[in-house]
Image (cartoon, rainbow, N blue to C red):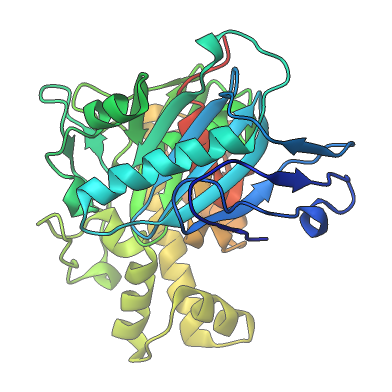
Amino acid sequence: MQAAVGPVGRVRLGVVMRVDAVARNVTRDLDDLPGGGILLEHATRHTAAFSIDSDQPCLALRIGIDLGGTKIVATALDGSDEVVRLRTDTPRGDYGKTLEAITNLVAAVEHFVQQRRPQGNGGRASIGVGIPGTISASSGLVKNANSTWLIDQPLREDLETRLGRPVRIANDANCFAISEATDGAAAGAEVVFGVIIGTGVGGGIVVHGHLVGGMNGIAGEWGHNPLPMPDANDEPLPQCYCGKRGCIETFLSGPGMSADHEKVSAVKLLPPEIVEAAASGDAAADATLQRYEQRMARALAGVINVLDPDVIVLGGGMSNIARLYTNVPRLWRQYVFCAGADELRTRLVAAKHGDASGVRGAAWLWPIR
């Protein structure tokens, strides 16, 4: 459900929490929280009713922010439990207003929840932020961001100044990977490769519960490797926005699938329409999915050969194609350097936390101590 948040003032939030009907019974009078345009996406379940009417900061709370191109999402984690999730529109093209939006979301979260059992953290919430780019180790500025108004900005420094505490920032695919490796579909695995396949293609690596960022901050960016072993169906290699041709992203992203289908069939469809058409017996749509699966198998086989992960977790809109989880592992066997088919034990699984995985991973940038 969604609840609008109005002008600044005191918090008056009554929440009737019943396990069987939390969504129906979250009542909202949020007109006193900062930052108009904030929407409630999720509130936790409890067995008793409670209300918040406090100006005190939350204790031992971990806040995650997912700074996307169209929306900014904030969550608060108590252990692995998501207490609340709020969102607001991204002020595209305006760096100053983006900082303001994040600051308002943090203030809204800290007013919304009241931690009952103080445990460290100095009584202040920790803050992690996932961004569609990375922070340069040499300059501290944002680089490689498709939200271009963030590029060359001191985002971490500016947020720390506004929020008055340390802020950890990571690539959004890295946040996705740490979320799924910590308490998601790959929980307990030693080596995890997290893949986001949507409008773009990204990845993150987690080893023994720790993110691997790399010397250049680009570990896991498999989407801008060339598609391995291109065949006649892959020619001519598509142009990528990064300036290269034939990047994995140009084939495995949602726009990549649509472009491939249109090139072969002269019919323009979105990926969900292609999947639906294939399920209804459309031969051209099924052929598009088969080419997609072959390409994904080749691309992920390269990851397995280099990283040898226990689990590969798929997230993003394209991860909703159910047949991938059966067909791609069957196909990648022919490309993986392995003693035999029975020896290949890497699993391909769907993300447990869905669209919330990235923002949860941002919160997990501050692990429980």
